[in-house]
Length: 386
Ligand code: AMP
Image (cartoon, rainbow, N blue to C red; front, side, top):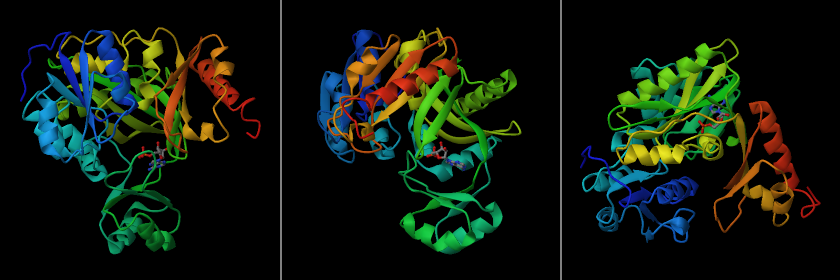
């Protein structure tokens, strides 16, 4: 069900998923006078803690999904592994933004690659893999090194195998559990970049400045903006993002992750039809955060100004930081200009995103130095072993 009349403050936003992205959307929505209901299988979640109502039921309990949808005015999702049938059940009752198609493309790496290829968007060579013979054939065409990624349910490097020699094919196929997969050529990138943009019901398109990202163990580690790339590269990345959003008719926020090769070529890696970890610094650094932008788009309101007030950087805080006890919060809160965000997760597991730090500075590089140093302090006094 869709219509273009604006959904005004006082209305209720429904969120499928209940992690930190939902939490930050809920906080932005509440600040603008909206109510928020969240739906996920868990209870006392990062998003549920700051919402008016938390619905807890399995995603495939479509009666519960429909009951949730009936209590809200518009619905969005905060992570892309929400089953398409759940999203479709919501879309039949209330406006679901972005729609089911963007979700389906983003949750399957093969669909995503085919979508990029069909729209002339540059990507690394790839081959679909559904058995060992196809993997061996794929290695012959894609070449080595290559990365084998499960087509679905993979994020933050989960379900990925680096293959450096063809002899590793069988072991890699076993390591991903014989799941349908995509083999893609390894990219010797100079930089990883992302573009986050919002698109309104009327097609208004508002991108943020590019983010330059670093990863550790396949998980985002730091982001900084503006990225140090030539203006022509930045413009090209934004153009590709607009193509993606228009082709998928996305109403909401979407992120495109790119590789930039040493010879200046942009390659699309993947898309996320929602706010993105690389844009968390927009909360502290930009006139309109990515979460407020998502709210405005989902509600059919004019989009905000995405300008960044100052160069900024973000460092993720993973559960590993808790390995030897509670991090030394006071040591970073003592630093002027460092902002601490924690997501209210009760259990700190290695690799789990628990929070982030943001800093603003005269340059993006200086801000990145500050958040890295601040994060180092968290391992300080209370964790002498690290
Ligand atoms: P993904 O889950 O596809 O975003 O992958 C997580 C991270 O793994 C990326 O941000 C890169 O750092 C690395 N990676 C993924 N695919 C490739 C590739 N084809 N070549 C080189 N590095 C990759």
